[in-house]
Image (cartoon, rainbow, N blue to C red; front, top):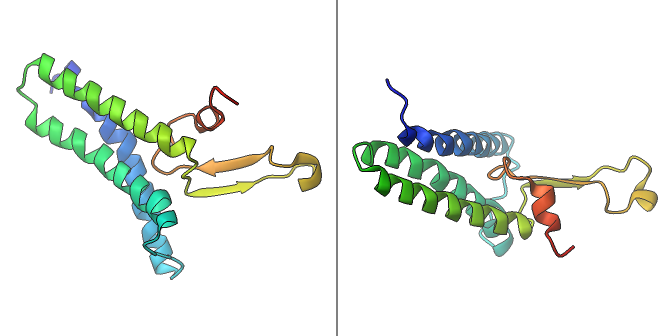
Amino acid sequence: MKIRPFHVWWIGVILFGASLFAWITATVLFLLKDIANLSFNWYYIKNIYLPFFAAFVGFCIPVVCLRVLKRSPARVWICIFVIYVVVMLIWGIIDIRCEHYQVGGHKYPHGPLVDGHKYYFHYYWTWYFLPYRLIEKGIDD
């Protein structure tokens, strides 16, 4: 198999495939341990269902494009790939900026009174590859 520029779609498959694997693994483990809370309220929609849907969309679009756009002209798939990257980056930045993380907490090396909110951590299962600390802080902070 000859590697062509068209195979840039594999980046999306790999990045979001890992996200989808994390989501599926965590969901199965939570269901097996009977600690899954699958409520359908606004908190779960924005922190669980939409990020999971983003991982699913981020994985499925490149897979479909690898199959469907194989013989299309470069102008077509490049345009679609740029739209895909822009949409997924905007979605990720909005998700991270609004702090829709899946796991979060604080580490207090010197105690909570001394450290305050300085040593927090968030894990984003869908957007693990984006620099969340820079995005959460933003340019206006």
